[in-house]
Length: 293
Image (cartoon, rainbow, N blue to C red; front, side, top):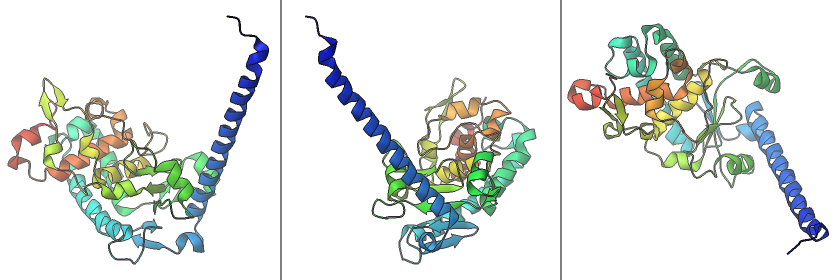
C-alpha cells in the first residue's frame, strides 16, 4: 500500500501544532517560575508576610508563628543540623585518623581545612558567593540562603510547586536555578529527621554494600547535601543539586582527592555517618564500614 504524501500533511500539521503549543506552554511555565523565584529572592511585603529567621537562614511561606507548622519544624530541625555539624567539624580535624569516614570520602589531610570551612559556612549561614550569571540576575555578588516552602495552593509559589514538587523520584528539596533559594516541597516534611545506624553499609571485598544512597534519605543529610552545594565554590562544584539524589555511596568513596571536596554528596555521606556513629566503639561493624580497606 502506498500512502500519498498529500494525505500525511494534515497529520504532520497537527503534530507540529501540538509541538508548538507544548513549547509555548513550557515557555509560559518557565516565565512564571522565573518570576516567582525572582520575587522570592528580591523580597517585598508579599514574599515577606510569612517570614521567620533561624540563625541567618530566612524561612519563607512555611507558616511562621503557627504551632506545628513547617516553619516550626524547620526552627526545631535547623539548630540540630548546626549542632551535629559541629561534631563533624571536630571529627574532620582528625583527618585520616578519623574512624567516621574522612579517609573514605576526602582521602587526604590536605582536605581537612576545606571540609571544615564548608561545614562552618553551613552552620553559620554565611553569605553565598553567586556564580557570574546568577550575580548578574540578582544584581549582587553574594546572598544569604533562603528556605521557601512550596504549596500548590499558595498563589506566590504554585508555579514553582508544579515545576519542582511533582517529580515522583525526588525527595522534596532542591535549588531554584542553582541559586541561594532552596525550595522545600511537602514531601520533604514527611521524611525522617535523621539517619539511623542500620542504613550504614558494610565493607565486602573492598566495596560498600549495599551500594545506594539510602543514608541520605532524611532531612538532616539532604540539608547538608543541598547546603554543601551552595557553599562549594561554583567553579569547583561537581554535579548539580536537584531534588533527585542520583549518586551512590561507592561513587562518593571512589572520588579522587581533588573531586571529593567538589561533590556535595561526599559531605552529606560523611556528615550522616558521623551523625549516626558518635561513639564508634559501640558498634565496630558499622564503624568499620566507613573505613575503606
